[in-house]
Length: 158
Image (cartoon, rainbow, N blue to C red):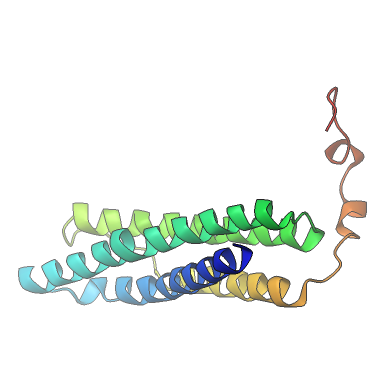
């Protein structure tokens, strides 16, 4: 069971990361979409890439990862830091969806910010996620940096 969840999680994560790299590259071609035929092709590629590939891969990766946490009983410090960086990847994912939506709704009249900024944001996050998973470093020292109020129950037991 755990091996199957790991396989599913890793495969979906690799697909999601590939989509987070490919979508900004596709969106960078937005300004070159001259004419209705070229714009329609651009719109279909980006829309399918996001709705048909990136979103399902992200949902499967996060769902399988969550199931894996409970199935394997993980609660290490490296995992908590990994989840912060996965949340950052999800934010970049959402921003790319916003750019795709705006490019389709405004039909060539959208002054898109440089989508390659997404690569600058997401590539380091991916690298940290893969490093944390492969190295599994001891990050318990991070708890010393947090205020005590974040580490103790407030009026309830755990």
